[in-house]
Image 1 (tube, helix red, strand yellow):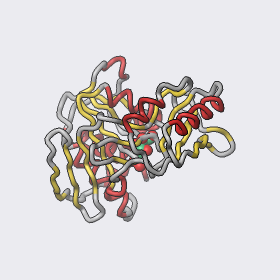
Image 2: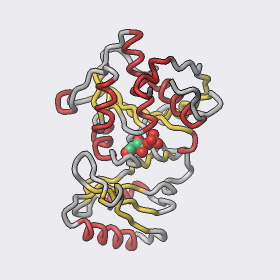
Image 3: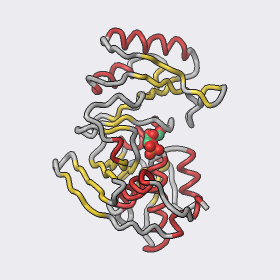
Length: 261
Ligand SMILES: O=C[C@H](O)[C@H](O)[C@H](O)COP(=O)(O)O
């Protein structure tokens, strides 16, 4: 077990642990991707081991599938499950309306399909992801490799037509080669600094041939659980309008870290 968690990992862990309290017996769950979602997978696996919780998970990436399988979480496919009770996932940014930027880990396509096919989406994040306006984090869009440079040019033209000031678009790399997603696509990162109208941008980007999906999640997230380094957790519910501060006991057992040893 790691001797100590950094404040940021502790915040991610606390958010993940609190979010798994929402999980009930018999649920079909979307399992998100990324470092925060990986804590949720570990916390969920612990509830399965310790409490005999019965759930089935639909992973949103090959990485999450591998971790969940390794930790003994029963898995299925979205086509088998058809509809899910809840998805718990991380985010790169969330705003006051709980609109999100996702895709920093290149998993936005499966993540959006799975979250949209869920009764409820819970986002887990450290407080640094809480922003008043989306866009400081580069917006990822997933594009088909065929003709990607033409698609990139069309994206740039679209940004000009929307009067977007900062519109640098870069192909995400994995070393010397383009990064390839689980769906065998590429990722373009849009360095916009701020997004004035996320709803409009999300719609317009998806009209461009070659764009498969964008990382803006609009009206999809219901609850955000924010972890703080000091042991506090804030739960914000967009439907009830309520925000509650809680304390979550920080008692990571050695089992939680089993896959990190
Ligand atoms: O593609 C990856 C996902 O959208 C992640 O959920 C997002 O990038 C947040 O990741 P992390 O929890 O590692 O900050």
